[in-house]
Image 1 (spheres, rainbow, N blue to C red):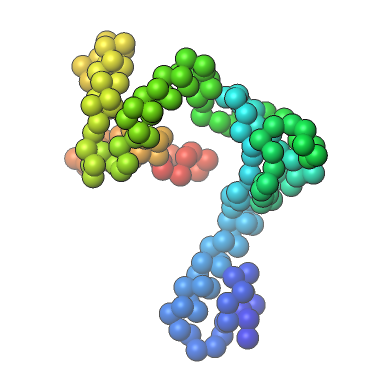
Image 2 (image 1 turned 30 degrees about the horizontal axis):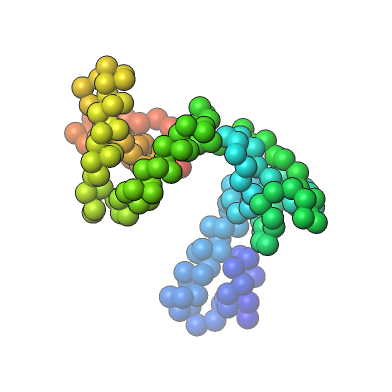
Length: 184
């Protein structure tokens, strides 16, 4: 019989197998996140040259706004061509300074990518730190008047590096609000 105590859709109450227990545990976890409106779903967008705006098909606006999963496939990358698109302004993006869409930054990134490729192809620990990354760290340290600078690929990685370093010796308490980023 299908499990009646979670939404995972697995067979429940039967043989008690490890697979059955795992599916039930995952199903209960997902149900708990859903009940607290904490379950995230993919919501597709069509990028624009903007640090805060994207395009979405107009008929998906209501689904997008309430967090239901949306799919954008075969949608033209610009307005017209048969499908009505609307501009959505997102205040939760991380491109605070607009550098991700700045003409000079885009041109410089394209120039470097054409000559050196699209990055180190793995983490710095595995594949080594590129000379270009080290030059950027040195330039940022000079700009800020600090001894050193360390580039990290994400806010998650930065939080993990800082928090584990601070707490490594013990005797440190970290207080975190439940709405902080998951890495904290």
